[in-house]
Amino acid sequence: MEKRKNISMAVIKRLPKYHRYLNEIMKNDIDRISSKELSEKIGFTASQIRQDLNCFGDFGQQGYGYNVKALYNEISNILGLNKSYKSVIIGAGNIGQAIANYTQFTRLGVSIDGIFDANPKLLGIKIKDVEIQDIDELEKFLSENYIDIGIICVPKINAQKVCNKLVKNGVKGIWNFAPVDLSVPEDVTVENVHLSESMLTLIYLLNEKSEQ
Ligand code: NAI
Image 1 (tube, rainbow, N blue to C red):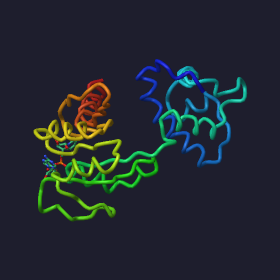
Image 2: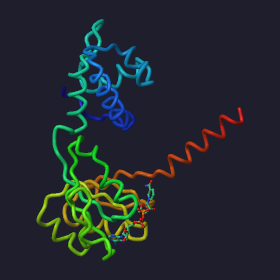
Image 3: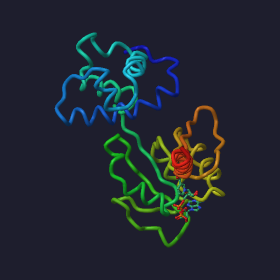
Image 4: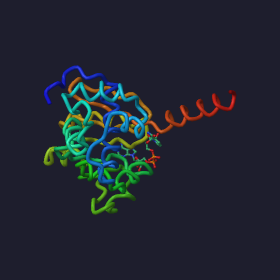
């Protein structure tokens, strides 16, 4: 599978959905699947699926469909799930604690290795065996532990400051929940998660349907 260059963002954004559905399909003991059957399950057109998967090499065999397990494994590799990732959560409030309590990230190979907060009342509390530490300990922790991902769950006014600390200490991936556009060097990747934007899309579509 060598065709990996210049993959469009649109294709990359669809890969997690392929990954999730193929996992479901595997659980149902289905070994092979055609792009048409996959299309009925996932909701992308069959030609879209063939085009997407073709970006990464020849997965399917004409007339035989895709080998589900091989495709699942390959998409896992493309997504980088053949490795493990260490992360820290900054901000142990509502969102930070919800993420720390969510166990499914371990399935993706992402471990929560540290949780940091500025509120003295939270220090020492354990979430899934990880103790909340003082934010002042963050830089020391990062210098002693290689951390891939920083998960920012602080109020927006403090988000850039926290981000700078992470970046300065070698963290290359930022999962940002604060409603602010972070500025980072080119070698750092930020993925923003904004539930409100998703809610606004829902509200728009809800109104659009009710007006029809
Ligand atoms: P929260 O107030 O429950 O928690 C924030 C935590 O950050 C507190 O425990 C506070 O002590 C800590 N904190 C503040 N400054 C800090 C610093 N400099 N270093 C370390 N810890 C610090 O807030 P909540 O509800 O968890 O929201 C957190 C962030 O997530 C906010 O920016 C909020 O706007 C955002 N948010 C994002 C959502 C999304 O969909 N992306 C949804 C809800 C909230």
